[in-house]
Image (cartoon, rainbow, N blue to C red):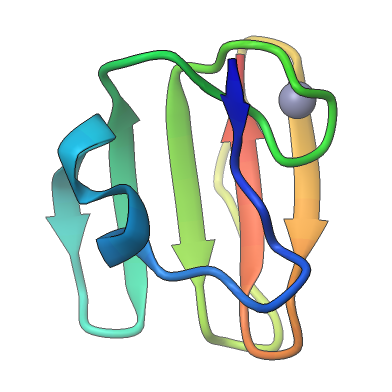
Length: 81
Ligand SMILES: [Zn+2]
């Protein structure tokens, strides 16, 4: 399984064919995983990928499933499984 590589940043365009854009607020995006990419943190298959360029972010409710976090110099990623 190809794992998302965040060593040199993260660009959804690199994985465009395997991720479906569900929500786009300009600097915050939610992507749905639709192929066989591995989580950048644990390498396992995942469900959704939340990406923000903000330094901080808040959630009203916690994900109801296991999740991983990853960061690049510019982005914060939350991956739900
Ligand atoms: Zn993971």
